Length: 352
Image 1 (spheres, rainbow, N blue to C red):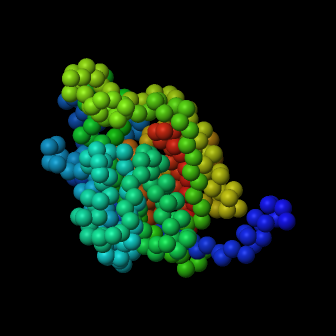
Image 2: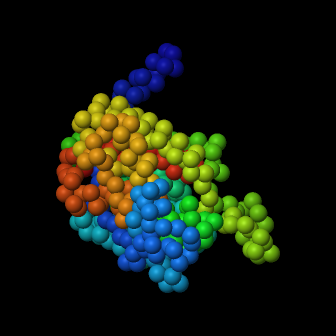
Image 3: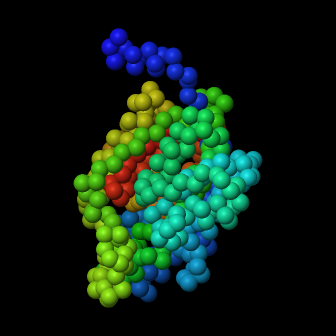
């Protein structure tokens, strides 16, 4: 028997994998509203300059020197998601925590959330760092664990505190005006049928342009990770840096690819789609992609105008907000898509 035939036979007789579904959603942003004009106290900028380039009007930041980390924001979002799912923290068997701004260098922020939320001792805690695509990667990971039957209740979190690590000067304004703080969470459980389930996820990466959007320090390839003697000579390398034109070019190429991939995998068309919820990196990117693909404005959910780019938190915040506003509901076909540092990109198609 040839190897191809053997593989086919094994597939034909393999037990069908179950699907997962989102049973609960929750989100949280800090109360401090930072408007574009507020940024003038730190840098040479204006409301008009920021709106024209990004579409952002305001963002939420944690209070300065308050000791608030991403896991604190994640705590509030997770409590809401659990309540929405009709579950308690003791029911969670695994947490997948996505962030690029961990509370501390190590350990990962997931264990701090576990402790604060009351997730049982012995539960699996996994921290991932896929930046803007983090929540989609997290959904895919949770989906696989539920499909195989290893876990039945998985909490997926995206949480960020960017504001404490930005270059609030004119030199850093191209990046710093973009980012906000926030968290979003989803509880995944086994799906009863395909009327409400996660249909597929699609994950990709290409490290060729990794330095086009990055922060160099802290870094284990340097000794020490943040050289004390170099603090005054880092020349901003501890702050995020971005080649905006390069990022834009790749984003408007990869996002449509990921969206079409998800639709094709499930035999769906854009006409079947109730809502596209893209990562909130730049309103101009989302508008360009929607226009290029022929997706009507009322089928694309954008909230970057009010929250800025919250990286791994942006999609769950937007998904929760869109559903809460009544624009999507049970059984609706929803596509999530993201592109970000790495570069990484991906999509998820689900029936809510």
